[in-house]
Image (tube, rainbow, N blue to C red; front, top):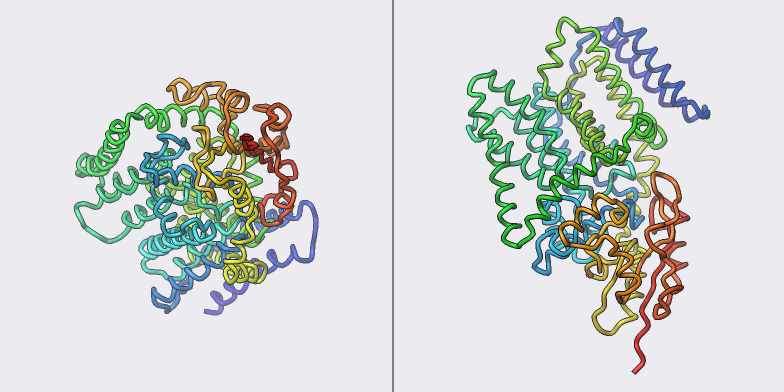
Length: 563
């Protein structure tokens, strides 16, 4: 008993010391130094401290735990609610989704690169939120909460009903997802909604003969949100192989694959009926292949990703590092039981989540959302004595989050109405709308969120600003007759959208870059347009979390024709 008590105290002391030092020691390489200290501390004391197998658990009921996790999720997800935009993908998804209200099929008249189920999900939440973008953000918190609950239940089943391990795995996920780049309404979150449910069904003690059908249905829906999640068929197939132990494997595979075939056939027929089957197939095959071939992903950016956690809540960075150390240590110290790793679908899930990031190939952090879920899930692989160090880091990080950013989150949640009123692009959209008495058209080559506020389609088929610069997208859609290859020049020089939104500069791969696609000084070559003064909107601190001094808000209004 004394030995276990000493071990617990020593392990928690390591976590406290490593977590406290950054508050008193400031150095450019402090993260590196402290990482080395942590690694040495673990390896030196591994045989003495981290091979014990003591048990600890909590006596809380599930409802109390779920309510606690829900409260923490709401708090951690709304730290940045006062910022109108964090990622421009979300605005493009909103514009693509609102076209459904006009009776159109996703990608029929407004093109975005994701699957149709994402846009129907968005449209459903938009019905509840109205045109209140802030309410839409809050509704998306419910999706993350459900994912967290599935994670909690999955760990609970895998850990022989260990509530403490289940709680801390869920807390780890929520703290990781509290980062500015992770609180957006990304397609990965919607796909993870289905995948997390499938993960729970894979471990739930049910003998339903339709289980593989349910799991196959969930993965199919995930791929109809984000095409790349077809990769997560790998850990599921691994699970089915292990679950059937090679018996009735063919029957299990048929049950798993059939829903995917049926759902995609239904959408093929649906798009064929609306005469845009070519667009559907291209969006699912040809364009994703071009996306993969962009080949921007690299190890350096992955390192920067991990360091970003240190800059926000450094104990969570050490929690991640500890998990990776323990997983790698197990791998190298259990060669005689290497099959324990090979025959484990959770490890396959973790590896697949990293592959997903590299297949995405653009270094976008939100491509690692699946990894954050997988690393939280992999805590189940860590023995109790090792988990104590991880729990300590997670506890400190959770407290730090509440102390450091809790007040901002509470303020945001208490003042939702005034925050929404102060969103600058919303105010700008009202100013634009006041310029017209009749219906009007809008070409948004940037700041597409204004299209959402105005409830207007984009004048051009492609919505997302960055996709205008992707040759493989433009050429592919041009080959289908949806656009001309020089469509931007044609619109800006010869057509007459009533409003033009653009920026002369943008950030490309982290660097401020002059926009070479088109000349954003529209009033220089189209004298029938006047430029609005948008200085007050550009200077509004709530415009965007990521301050970009090079990104302008240029708004040009077509002058009314004199009678």
